[in-house]
Amino acid sequence: MKILCIAVAVLSLVSVGQPASLACNNLLTPTDKNPELLGRWHMIAFASESCLATTLFNSLVWPSLAMDVTSKDKPNTYDYNIKVKMYGFCFNETETFIYENSKMIDLDSNNSPTGDPDVVLQTSCPDCIVLKSNDYIDTLLLLSKRKSVSDAELKEFETQTQCLGWSAVKMLNTEFDFDNCKILNDDISDEEAETLGNNILSTMSERLSGMYNDIYNCFRDKVWSYFY
Ligand SMILES: *[C@@H]1O[C@H](CO)[C@@H](O)[C@H](O)[C@H]1NC(C)=O
Image (cartoon, rainbow, N blue to C red; front, side, top):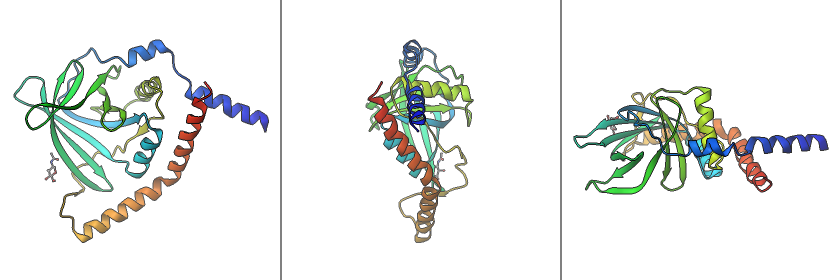
């Protein structure tokens, strides 16, 4: 039994160990390429500084997210329409951002910068962007023009989050059909409210067992982080 404990301990240390710092320096540098921003972006995976927040969000909400970027008449200025699908319902919202010096800066209705800019980090994936944001909490988001990425591309993203000392990467829902869904708006009918309620409950119960395991892993990693 003792041998098993030691084996588990060693494995845990290996799995949360920090990768070489040289690669980290590189991966946490803003991109020096100019990504082709126009078009549809699929949000593939994310991580945050809070293991618990990431886990609860991805277990209980597990949305599909995509973003359509279109150009404005002003240089470096873009509209983006974020599409969200969760529990079988969809909604979307359009905002404007300006891209400069590897940063995406949101503009308000008066075209003034608002909030903290998102930084676009290095990635070797040719049609991906990696966004480091600080909205409510620090997050890292992997977006691709494709609906999925290769294992190697995902691995690099995982390394980026480990470089930051963050928790495990979570995969977002990759069901990117935003046409066949109920529209979520303010005047929701009783029938729609009932469907929504049922969908929320079934999503949560399907993902509950995974959630307990992930929460356990959050605490395990936290405890082990005191030892290395
Ligand atoms: C955004 O949502 C509205 C309903 O609120 C819908 O009519 C519209 O087609 C959607 N727009 C896009 C670009 O998906």
